[in-house]
Amino acid sequence: MRFLVFVLVVLAASKVATQQYLISTTKNEIIIAAYKDRAVTACREAARARRLAIPASWAPASDIRVVIGKSSVDVALWQVDNVLWQARYKAPFLVVPVEAPPHGLFCEFDIAQGAASLVRM
Image (cartoon, rainbow, N blue to C red; front, side, top):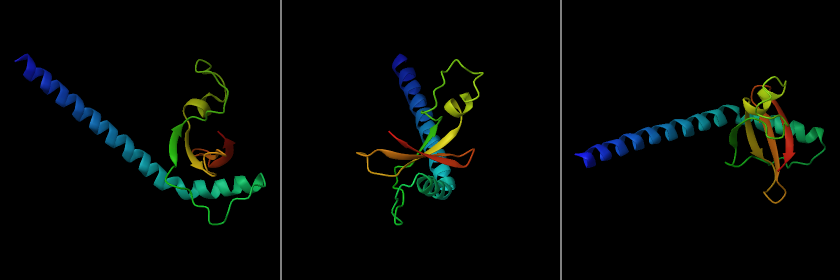
């Protein structure tokens, strides 16, 4: 009897885990599809402003990621009264690779603000 209960608990947990994974993956794909064109345009403008040459044929690969919070903002988790806290821990960003990984140039597109910035990681 205990074995049967254990098996049912494992099956229920795996069902919930699978559902959460599918929901998360689907949300990321939807966000990327909705904002990819705006992100690419903003990244081109940010590169042009910094006088970086991005080839006209540049199209971001499938390595675009959705992240929450801008890692380059220096705000501690407990500093909730800081003006930049929202940008560091709550704002959604698309991270678009611009150059191959050895160079590590990425474009961070702030979905809420509609602005892009280039960073080296």
